[in-house]
Length: 318
Image (cartoon, rainbow, N blue to C red; front, side, top):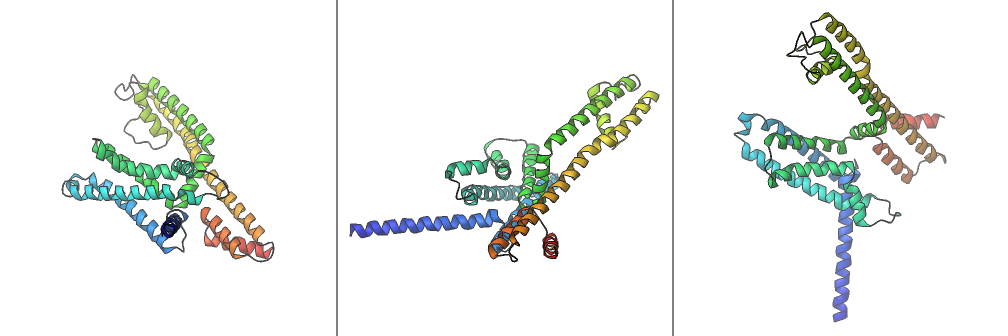
């Protein structure tokens, strides 16, 4: 009798463990894999994207006093519900994060989850949760609270691959961006110092110090030219014209770096897919396993169906 009870208990534990493993794997497929053929995964993504949009809309509407004063309770209730959903989502993502690792690599579950928590998407999810939890614990200025909740916009990077492409470009070109920002800073300091020298006596209220002159320097270098502060002396106008010309080239640097980085990233992604496609087609046909692998690569690299068909046609013709 005792032996049968022990066997029943062991079998029950095994069943519970198996159910938990299956549940964890299924949740990982829903939350992280993002398979377009999985309706539950698609609907979950749509729900979370809609929730993010509604949260941002709520933050915007809360700044309208006439609306906020009438629907203050509804806004607060929606915020609490949203925070709870984002918290559950974050905890589930941490729990299922061990499903996405290579099974051949031996690593503890705790370490794997800690590594995941340090990734950029996980940090964004945590910020989305903290922006709702912090006001429940501490008294915080309403303007700061709304600014924190606007960080939930960053969650879009998880659902739109083009955001990941942008982040990848920024990471790869960070040295070039830093160099461009350094040049912009030098140009701003030169511009504000020069206009301070030429305009201080004529307009002490607008160019009374170098920090005050920085507003004009930024507006002129970026070629915005609001017109609220302008030089009136002859030397000030000549200097301003030179700074405007310099600004056209200097401000264009980050845009050029970004465009070049995007182009390089797209070329590398296409080359990677073409290489894998070429290997798969060596024997004249693509197996289901190879097709699944190619689809996963195409999805990760945000390649369109037209691009894939064009590459396959190109290889078939050759």
